[in-house]
Amino acid sequence: VDLALFFYYVWENDIDFPEMQFNRQAATIAGQPLVALLNFRSGLGHCESIYFDILVERLGSQLEHFNPNRFITMYLVDAMDGFQFEAFLVEIFQTIGYDVKGTQKTADQGADLFVSRFGKTMVIQAKNYTSSVGNSAVQQAISAKAFYGCDDAMVVTNSWFTKSAKELATTANVRLVDREGLQTYLDDYNQKLIEIFQAEAEEA
Image (spheres, rainbow, N blue to C red):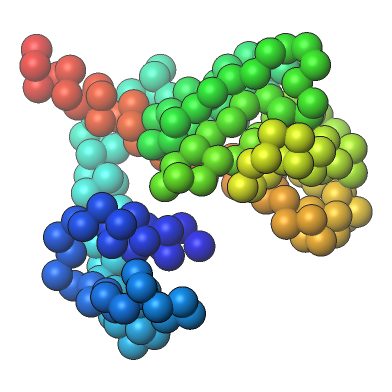
């Protein structure tokens, strides 16, 4: 889904991307695909190559500029209270390229923050738990999505989701980010910290 949104963003903003051939008729003829399947696969392969190069470059940067005192670990996240967890999620999503808006702490209708990118807005329910997250959190996200008219809904936790919560989320098309998924976001966040540290070192 993110790759499709990326291609749409490139096309919508007329960004030069010679590796991808867009269907010009898609703008005027309903039902016309923006990218032919063959071209999509070709673009996917090119993006995978770029992604691999980025991973290699990041690994080198991590080894050179690693500073454990500036890293945020999952154990630090576990020690946060609910408000700190929400505030940290704001930092994470801002760092990885989302526009973020918080909510009032009372009468938020199940919304803890809103993130937007590529013209899509997603409401997020944050749960910093020591036990598994159940249906209630998913139901709150569903309600918030409808109440605020968002495109997507997500529940983020430092824990895990119950089987019933996963089933409800699948049915209602709510994205779930469990402890493993949150670690991926943390990795991206820490990588940004490395890049900042590297820039500071080069300026010194």
